[in-house]
Structures are given as C-alpha cells and as structure tokens.
Length: 336
Image 1: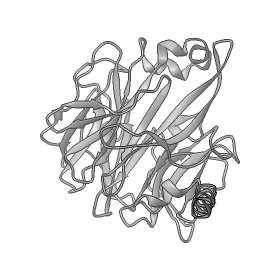
Image 2 (image 1 turned 135 degrees about the vertical axis):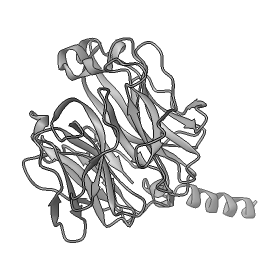
Image 3 (image 1 turned 180 degrees about the vertical axis):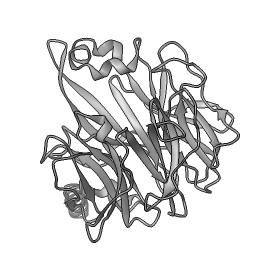
C-alpha cells in the first residue's frame, strides 16, 4: 500500500509541474522569429523573438514596416516601409539586427514590397510597381537587385500582376504569384521561373474567386507552401473596412496549402476565417502559419486574434507555437 502511495505522490509531482508555454517554440530548429506588430505603434513596427523568449523591438519610427525577411545568415532583415496611407512611399530597407543600422535600397515613388534573399545572401528579389524601364506601372513585376540596391533589373516585365517572390533553396528558381493565366485582378496563381526570369511555368490552378499568395519553399525544394483565398468575391474587397466587417463570410476563408513541383495541391489548414503566410521550419519537419480568428459582435467583425499555428507537413496536429501576449491582436507578418 505504501509503495502505491509513494508512486502516486511521485506521479502527481511530475504531472503537476507547470508546463513551459514556450516549450514547442524552443523545440524548433529556427533560432528567431521576426514579426510585425502594432502593439506599441499604430503604424506597426518590427520585433524579434529569440530562443530565450525575449522579444526585442527592432524599429522605432513613424513608418509602417511589413513583410520582414531574414537573411540566410540570420544577421539582417529586409523589409518594406513607408506611409501606410500612401503605398507609393513603400521602399525596401535592410536592417542589421546586431547594430540597428538601416540601409534604404530603393527610392522610386512606386510600391516596392515583399523582399526575399537569395540563398547566397548577395541578392534580393522583390515586387515593384514599375515597368522594365523603371516607370510607374499599374501592376507589379518581379525585380532583383544587389543587397546595396545596385544593379536592379526586372525579371518578369509584362501587363499582368507578378508579386510575392521567393527564391528556392538552391538559388535556381523563384516562386511567385501571378495573374498572367487568369488575366483578372485578384485572381492570382502560383508560378515558378528560373532565377534569370526564363522558363516561367504555372504551378497551381484556381477557379471562381480563389486566389493563391505568398509562396514559400520547403528546405528540400520539393514543395511550395502558399496561402489560398477561398471566398466568393474578389479578395481585394477586404481593403474596404466596411465591406470586410459586414461581408466577412464572403471574404473567407484563407487557408495554408502545399504543392509539389508537379502541381499536386494539399490543403494544410481548415480554418473558418484566416490562415496564411505558411513557411517551413529550417529542417522541413513543420509548417508554421499565421492563424486569424475573427472577433464578432452581432455577426460583425470588430477585431481578430492573430496567432502562430504549427502543423506537420501534411497539415495534421495543429498547435499554438507561443502563448498569447500583447502582440496577439495585431500580429500581421513574420519570418523565421
């Protein structure tokens, strides 16, 4: 009897120990997460979460910062920044994490956004609303430049929308979204091309008002994860706050998906509202995406909870990566 009592006591002591809410994050191979939040400034700033669970603010200014991309060596962050109310002021910047030194790479009077690094860390690919001659254009093209902003060149000149580029792990290929097949605004699909802009081929096929965004490569280069909009009206209607708040059912859901290089697509998330910006862990064992759960009052959206959701490569075992904190209500974009 006493042995059983001692065993029960020991079991209780073990099971009653507090669980570290950051333990799942600490198990991941990625060293940091860089993200954008409006917790301290309405226009949004960049922050860094490290493996000691410390959150460091990286930017302090009156600009809107977004779409951070970590360099391959983890020492720098490329991002877009400008006046949130005037997207023509959005330019590409690079920040040295250790020193805080910032370098502005573009200055064009057009939207420059969605930067990503080449695997060697010596080039940056991005989307820019200018044509091959550098003149303002109604749709974005894919551009590349050196990490100091020099030698900028258009990779995908044309009348369609090409944006959200990301380099493959071996540097040979760039994935991006495009309307070149649908020829309709808000009807993007995922394409890939050689890193010099040649051999463009379509990877995903959509229907209705479906639209694919934000492709990101697996470490092996065998898959691309991306975000698919599955609403019943153009996703661009989200930009009208009143339309979004009242007609959110028609503007949902967004879900994370995965495609192999033959175009076979697997849905990774099954959320009612929003799930996007999927990225693979450094070792390819997990996929992280940003989940949005709308806060409703009388069926009207009045806010949302934003949180990191970690899943297996097949979409199973969804788990919250880190606990809720003051950034949860306004977390918008990230890289790890």
